[in-house]
Length: 94
Picture 1 (tube, one colour):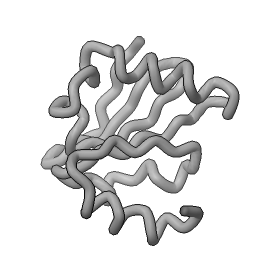
Picture 2: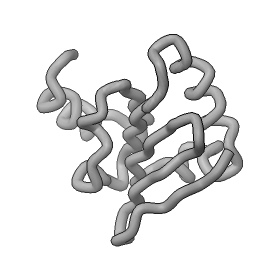
Picture 3: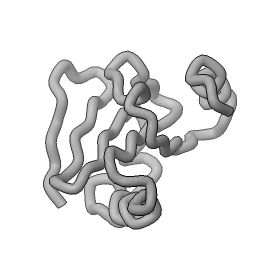
C-alpha cells in the first residue's frame, strides 16, 4: 500500500498492530488511536531493521500495551512520541 489514506483505515480493522514506516507523513499527533501504534523511522533505509529491533527492545516500548495509542518517531538521538490523551510530545533517550 502506498497511499496513507488506505493504511490508516486498514489499521483500524487489525488487532493492536504496530505499523512501521519511513514516511514522515505518519508522524502526526492526529493519528493517535487506542487500537494501534504508528512508528516513523527517521533513519536511513538500510538502518530500519536495526532501529525497529532497538525500539521493540526499549524498556518504554517493549510490550504491545506500552505502544498502543502512540505515534512514535525513531531517530539516532532517541525517540519522541505523541500519546493518546496527552497534549505534549514526549522525548525518550536510548
